Length: 447
Image (cartoon, rainbow, N blue to C red; front, side, top):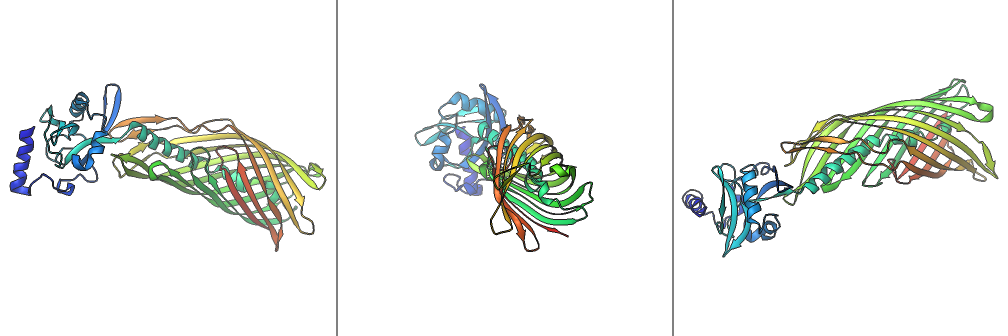
């Protein structure tokens, strides 16, 4: 080993200048980064890459490696990795990255792969010499965290269409008009999705219109959704989409205030995904885009103004909905640890029961409106994620667990504004797949 290091120094003297104490930029570099290898030894898994450095400037980094002080581990890992985590003098040098395990009198003790076998060389390169030293690319725990965070972010994206029915269309009777009348509206929701390990924002914006034929009022709407989630290690998911929704409001017993609402929607969009992770302690990322498709149906029964307590009118309701989401598979590009994710589907069946309330504000044409609702999701976990960290290993991650039962509450104001009716309502939920809070606004004209 010492002879090899001496021969490199001699060649460098005549051809490239003295190797000792040169800056790291003088070493041939890997583009975009040194390779990474995945090996198992002694019941543990190691993701190993290499870092161009010297002991003087990176003693803490080299001493933090699990093989520091352990010749047996350094020697065996060097034999397993060979040159798959980089070569000690950069691409083409023909010798594996250096597994440093100690120092002797100003020199570093290393093990490395050399021409078909593993070599142990105590006290070889100087502590000031720059070479590619083997380092953990990332821990298995860190990589699992990166993959699971991305999976959770995608789950949030797939679940974001819940806001279509249970946000912008959570009070369908508010858009009911008299027989023979038409209506048109604009509406929107904006909120935060920070339940559990979520960290992001979500929203809906739509325009719609309807006509009351007498036996039923038919409403049609088109809109746009967006959902942004921050992930670990500076990653993120940025999704948006478009939807079409149709609903029918049917008087079951108009004299008693009983109305049924049935409807469905189709949603299609895309998600831009940046998955962050650590390589040798530094942030890196891989990117991808994937198409999404969702459809859903809902049936609901409202009992409008079923009873009153003093001046407050109460309207109970029951609601049953089902949605099915699909995200296509995708392969990441860029970064040192890109992954391939298989396509995934998710579905949700939810039942809700609640009470709407309205209190007139004296001397105005406005009402204070409020809502209290209990909801239950029959499937308690999201879709599992599977795929491969390309060239290293496959993975299968369980879907994130959801709170199966939760509460939703809202309070706001609704009433005449100009030639139409305006509504502004603040909503919040206990922990669930829904956003934790959102502001809903709508403005409706009748003609």
